[in-house]
Length: 154
Image (cartoon, rainbow, N blue to C red; front, top):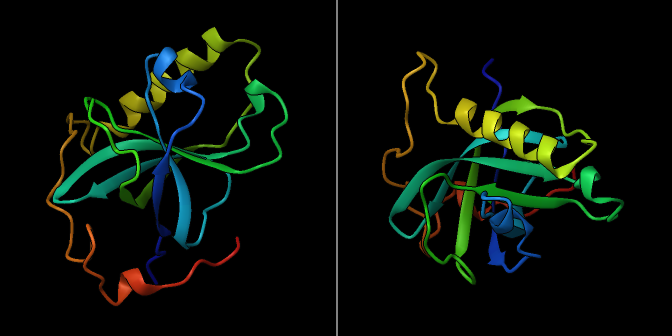
């Protein structure tokens, strides 16, 4: 049986701006629907309106920044420089890149994020890819059977 990875939806809210300052702006998602995967860094497909892109998502407690107590869902979309604040974002988890870990410095974190982005933007054959097919119906306001799921704790 094929393992189905989680799908979640939520509104993009403003974060602390650290990702942007480090060169990797993120869409911080407040999850309204879907089940969170285990903590870690994932290759994802991010969908909004009629747009979809491959990205990197960290699901975790951001251990390098100190204890925060909450689980964050942060999506970096390489090459995207638009404004997603207040928009509904669908995040489709494609594969896990690595577990979340604590780094000794922000410099080490930045180097690892670079490697994560490089890994996420390559398909299984090693070819670069940033854009994907358009989002399925249900993204951008129209619901489908799959998008009507309610949030489930992990």
